[in-house]
Image (cartoon, rainbow, N blue to C red; front, side):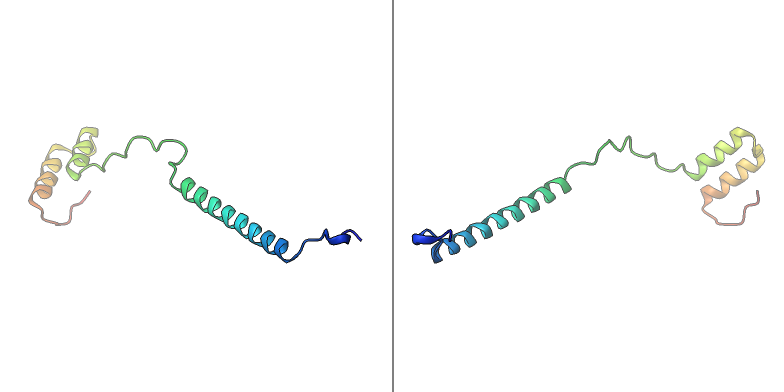
Length: 93
């Protein structure tokens, strides 16, 4: 009883309402995609800190072992000669 006397929504009303809803939904999808892409490119929270130092070389490790007294001078020189010559012979220790 509500739509008496020609106050109902005709064919054009339904058509325009359908188009308006589809445009609104499309706009919401575009906004969601834009936000997702924008937030995906933001830097992460907190700085990663200073870059990690490269691993020490074999000669440096050998020098540290010699400095700590784990190996004596003869063994240090022998192993250093092996490292510098590039031969991959077995080394005890």
